Image (cartoon, rainbow, N blue to C red; front, side):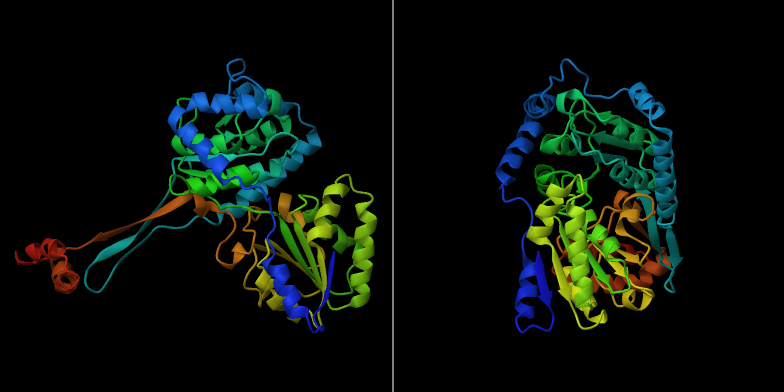
Length: 430
């Protein structure tokens, strides 16, 4: 774990190295993914079946790829009541937050008499990728599916890898709560390709969202343009800015909440107290020995974790902006003055009693957020990712006469005579 002090002479160099460090898999999956995409495009269901047999270990011919509605209902009915209530609470809060994101159509008529505006509409079909196997993240399913439904998407198609053909009942229950329409037992890059191109079995999607491994992320990157995507997600990350008035056990748990995701995750603490930094470091070590996910969390913490002492908490904001973290916690009594200065972060958690983990489940705002410093130019998943804006324009004879001559001049200047004629011929009728 890296310890830095902003007062050290080499701090600038060492912090820049931290900012620019590449995390993630070293495997070059691009060529393999390109081959899978090409195969699915050429052979459709046959290719999907071959990859399912190879990677998931079951024959689609012996088990229908589509998951029956009855199976989802049974999973929901069989859910532990307390867990079912937790999922329902999360779904209702996520839905309420995203309802407020729906944009409104606009229309105006300007001084020249030109009518113009914008109309919003949802995509027809959204594809949702849900990790399978040992990983079961119903919260992520809710975060991806509910904004699509709020946007007005007609058809949500979910794909999930199912080793041995078995699907986690918790995922099925969450899909039923969210309102997913269809579920198919396929995963990996082949599932993303099937959604992008469509097959005889898998409907073609307009947008594909949801987390996945390196092959899934690479497939989304390569297929962007053929299909819309949410983002190319990387390893999880958290930055915590905290003073010594915090309980070090709380802050240690916050740091480990991201470290336990993956060895490539990153957790960074900024504090103005050397004693508090030591206390958090000791608390992290203690908790690592107690966590069921301790092996993964330790690998992440030792490879990518950092504790950085700064002279004043305000100094951490500019440093955090350089990191542009996925998650930023401001663990202070009055977080708003610091929050006002933040420019780059996927989501910000304000105050000592707002751990990032509450946002992962029941807070309401979306937990699908930009990673890898992409918060400098992009935002978390929202209703808008499932919608598009269509502008419209209407000119009457008088309004065309008012603005048309300028259009003719510009078209002629650009060497596009047909453009000029399409306007000029209408003006000549007056």
